Image (cartoon, rainbow, N blue to C red; front, side):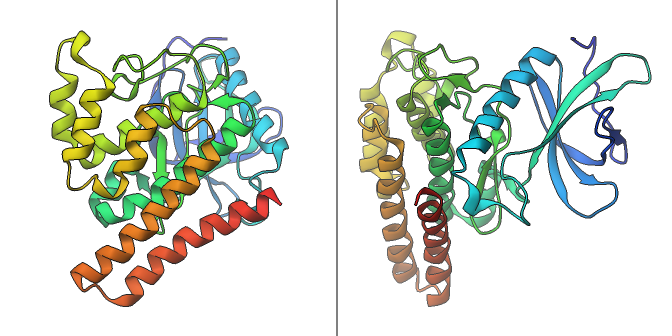
Length: 313
């Protein structure tokens, strides 16, 4: 079933499931994608918040639900559950329209935070490291389950005040080995003549590296992206990375990612975490920041690493 339009629902609108009869009150729009709209919602009879995605097409949304169901069944995120509820998929249902017809939706965990680029603007570049660790661990879970995220971009990532990251739109997820379903040009391996659009772990790691360059060294990437297609390549990206002062703490990792040298995402996540921890310690010393700030940052990294270790025991 495909709807004829995709209106944005106003805050206060109540979404009531046709089959399970659960009610959710829309609080605000989180984002719109090619195959649906994501809202921040609150349970009508409680204070718990979730992310609710309404799909334009039943088949497209069912594909996302299959991915989330698979991740849920893996059990790898048990350490990251909140209030005893699943980390990924909470509920699936349909909502009846006043004009007739139905729209499918699913409800998933919501991280109270900001899109990645806004988080960095508010907290500072030093905090990109801990957010990056969370993103890479999320990608590692996805890859372990046999999927590739594909359309990794700031709008699809929410980060809370402690640097915990959540992927919020799985519309571009593809089965490993297939073609990538959705992508954003600047983060796309094919756009930079760095490889195919085949869905593999290196594709997501490349996208994360370009995401990092874009957020921390945006102007240089903009210039490189504006060159003729035949001039866009990994050598150009490596030059940007090596010359950038703000990218220097992650340079070794970024070069490896754009060259496709990390076949294992867990290994890549651990390598990133080590660099991020070292960077915040150095920054605290150089700037004379209060010692507790460095401890708090490092603790955030350790909590993420500890949760991952517990989940994988």
